[in-house]
Structure formats: C-alpha cells, structure tokens
Length: 156
Image (tube, rainbow, N blue to C red; front, side, top):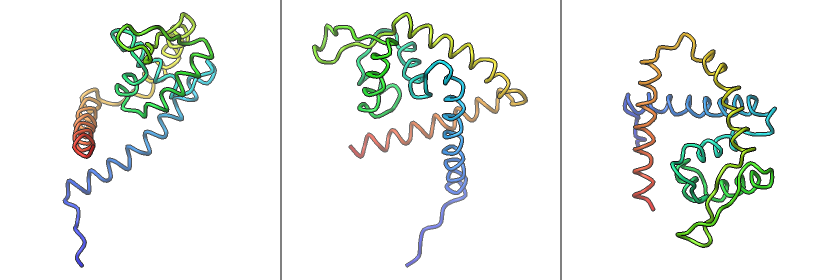
C-alpha cells in the first residue's frame, strides 16, 4: 500500500509545527523563570492575564474558552490562586453556580510586577528581529489556530 506523501506546504507546516512545540516548551520554561520570584508559574500568569484582558469578570469556563484551555485545569489553577489571595469569586447574577473570577489587589500587584519583569526581557529577546517578520509569524500561527479550531468544532 502506498503511503501518502506530504505536499511541499504540508512538509513545511510539519517543520513549523514541530518547531512551534519546541518554542512553546521553551517559552513556558522562560516564563516560569521570570515569574518564579513572585510565586507564580507561566500557567498562573496566563490566567491572571486572561482575567486582566477580560472586559468584565468572567466565570472559569469563559476564561478557559478565551485561553483555549481545559476548563478543569483552569478551575484547579483558579482555585489555587484564590487560596493564595490573588483572585476572589463573586456572585454571578446570570448563573448561580458559575461564579465570576476577579483579581484582588494582591493579584493585580502580582500581575503588574510580572509585566514589569517581563518587559525588558521581551525587549532583549526581540532585539534584531524585524517587526514585519514577527507580524507575519503571528498571522501564520493565527491562521493555523483558526483552521485547527474549525476542525475541532466540526469533530464535536
């Protein structure tokens, strides 16, 4: 039986995906090192960022959706953040059981400090890279994410 051969675009995308996996792992490790002095991990920092980015308080399920992450994992991390006083749960007028997640003053301070530590490091990391190249990479990865999301939606 003849195995299908990847097209040139398929082979290039495979190389891109494998490189993206490696870059993702390295990025998470890099992020962990940045926020470790604050008692955070990349995952916790991501969730604090999703809360900050939301226009209004959201339930965990919506945060998970925005992050394209597993709801149970987000719930576990949010519960840990709540125990550490970084977030609090507020009543949701639209759903009794799905409480809204908000940052506490301590959570806001931790997020702001993480950004303060991150900014000079990301500036150093981006030195010598062309903004246009970064924007092209962003367009490619965004399109790949959209296509994968479309496949996931049709499989459910």
